[in-house]
Image 1 (cartoon, one colour):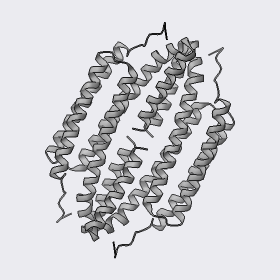
Image 2 (image 1 turned 30 degrees about the vertical axis):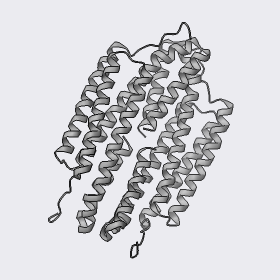
Image 3 (image 1 turned 180 degrees about the vertical axis):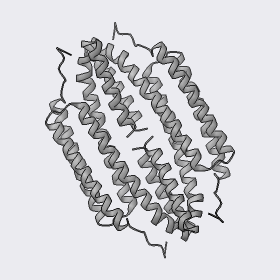
Image 4 (image 1 turned 30 degrees about the horizontal axis):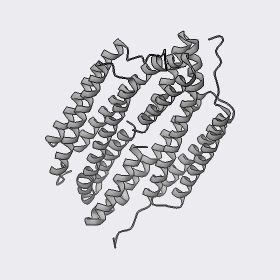
Length: 99
Length: 99
Length: 99
Length: 99
C-alpha cells in the first residue's frame, strides 16, 4: 500500500466530534446518577435512547469523513488498496447498522 | 392511579447498571481522546459501535426490570393503569428499537 | 403453567397486521424487481430502509399486543409463569433492538 | 457530472440479491400466515427479527457494491461529483442505521 496515506479526521470535524463526545459523556454520567437516585425506569430509558442516538450520530459523521478522505484516496489509488479499504468500511457500516 | 406505586430499579440491578454506565462513560471519554489524537477512523468506529451496543444493553436491562416490577404491578391493578403503563412501555421500546 | 392460556393476537390487530404484512410483501417484491432492472443503488437502499422500518413497526405492534394480553395475564398469575413470560418478552425485545 | 456514469449492481451480486429478496418475500408471506393462524406472538416476533436482519443484510450488500462502483468512480472524477455522491451515500447509510 505504498504511496497511500491514511487520512485522519479533519480539524473542524475533529473539534465538533470532541464536543459532541464530551456532551455524550455527560449524558452517560447523568444516566448513572439517575439510576443511583432511583429515577423512574421510563425516564432513564428515554435518556438511554437519546445518548444511543447521539453516539450513532458521531459514528455517521466519522463514516462520512472517512469516505471523503480515506475512501476517496483509496479509490484514486485503485486495485487492492481500494478493495481492502472498501471492505474495511463495509464491515464498519455493518457493525453500526447491527449495533 | 391511586394505590399504584411506581417500582424503582432493584438494588442489585441498580449497582450492576451503575457499574456498566461508569464503564460506558469511560469508553466515551476514550473516544474523545481517540478523536483528539487522530486515531484511525475505522478504529474509532469500532469503539463507537461497542459503546452503542453497551448502552443498548443497559436499556434492555432497564426494560426487563421495568416489566418485572412496574408492568407486573400495573397488570395486577388492571384497567386504565395497566393500559397507560403498557402504552408507556411500548413507546419506550419503540424509541430503543428505532435509535 | 396450569391455568394460564397464551392469548393470541386480537382480531382487529390481526387484520391490521395482515394488511401491513401484505404491503411489505409487495415492497420486497418491488425491491427484487428494482435489482433485476438495474435501478440505482441509492434508490433501492431507500426502499430497503422503508421496508425494514415497516417490518419493525409490525414487530412493535405485536409486542404491544403481547404485553396487553400474554404479559398482563402472566403478571396476574404471578410466580414462575410471570417470570418465564417476562424473560421470553425481554429476549424478543433484545432481538428486535439488535436486528 | 459529464463523463461520469452511475454504475449499476454487478451481474453476480444482482442474482444473489434477487434470490435473497425472493426468500425474504417468502418470509414476509409466512409472517402474514402466522398472524392469520393465530401463531404465538413471540414466535412471530422471532421471524420478524429474522426478516428484518435479512433485509438489512441486503442493504449492506447494496452499499458495499455501491462503494466499489459508484463511489469509487466518483472519487476518481473528484470535485463536486465526488462530494455529491458521498453525501448521497452518507444519507443512505444514516437511513439504514436509524431504521
